[in-house]
Image 1 (tube, rainbow, N blue to C red):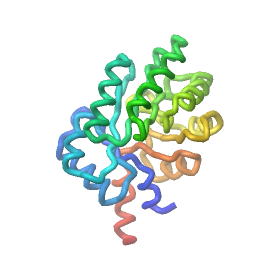
Image 2 (cartoon, rainbow, N blue to C red):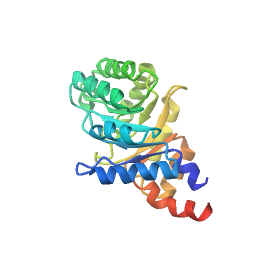
Image 3 (cartoon, rainbow, N blue to C red):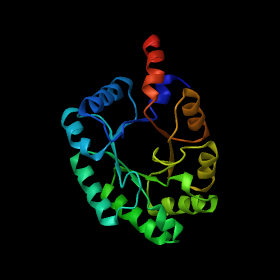
Image 4 (cartoon, rainbow, N blue to C red):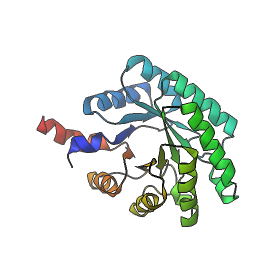
Length: 220
């Protein structure tokens, strides 16, 4: 797999609390130069990016990183993000609802946000590090039935990130129209290639351009 092929599956990510406009602009410039799948940025930067980068695929996060904001807040965040120019939405489920057995509520929330997204992509972050295997399997069904486009492993702010075991578990239990995004702790080229080869259609990481851009520069 070439560096360019890997970068084409990367959501080039910067979600630090301290992210400045200059850092975000550098992220966007890199995404344009190296043809990453998207930039994944805080919601407050969606509109400024869309004003400057007309053709850049913009991903933002909703209910991030804890997921326990009320549905009405997630709805408003999503509406404003799409209106402001976001092409992709990465939402965080309320893990507390899963622990309380409120599976129907989680599914309805995802469905509601997908309705707002319309043709825009909705990725559902389930934060695997806090879930049992049975809960992960149940969520594969919920994400599938809700009409979401992706199931995503992690926010990167939890106690652990993506694992090969979780990608393989997702592959067994998601529907044919759902793709997989691996995120959290993806730090090396080997990590990225492993997750892609195992079935991940997207990789969420801040490390990809730094790791791979030099090799691409040498080959063009």
